[in-house]
Amino acid sequence: MLLVKVIVGVYYMINGNVYILIGGRIMSWLWMSGGIFPESGNALLS
Image (cartoon, rainbow, N blue to C red; front, top):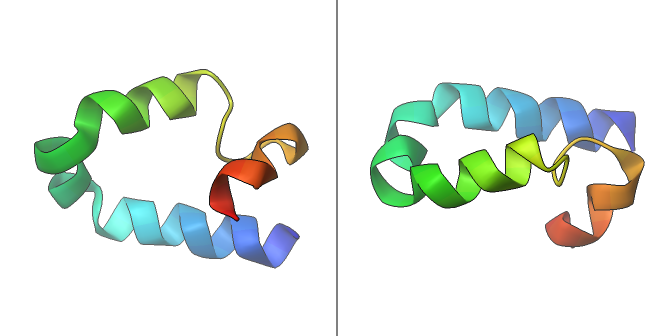
């Protein structure tokens, strides 16, 4: 699932400004709580 993590990481870097305006608080919470990249957080992407 490393490829998925890389794609998601690049996607959020490219579209960072959009997510800051729309869901910055939610995304920040998910990011800080380890909900995106760790293996235990893959369920949030599916």
